[in-house]
Length: 189
Image 1 (cartoon, one colour):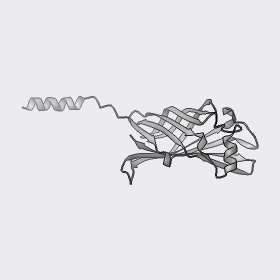
Image 2: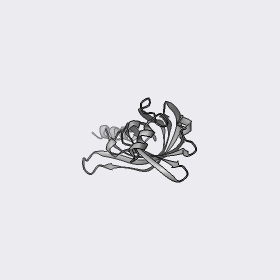
Image 3: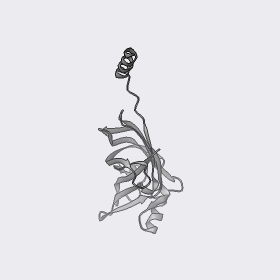
Image 4: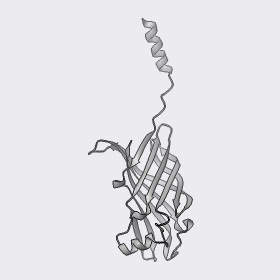
């Protein structure tokens, strides 16, 4: 009787660890707002946001890997001024008729402990794809207090030169350097 129990304990002690489960999260479009900031004529910082975002984020915390796949509907651009929004959606800037989406994709996420702190990926804007590094701050996961689902959120930032994507109208009067900020919430699948 003791031999089978001892053998089972010995086998358990030397068993290989179970592979960590990847966690897949779906973007909550009601609580995800990519935004941008750009210098306007040297006088102020103009800001805008996009209200249509979809995507998935996959995290494997044990192996410190993951991926990001985000799509932003450029037609959902909003600055608070209808005339400016119409101009920004036109050919000079986002040219939404031809390019209704921009995307960010990454298969390289850097971790500090269990939390992602940066991503190396590619932003596609106006049909041009270039490498962009995201800094990830305030990463936090828990249980949503209303629907009781697992949720993660974060703030991500990056700086790009819009002219590198072919958006060079009014440079330098309207700044070439653009700060991107993404406040994101995601639900675990």
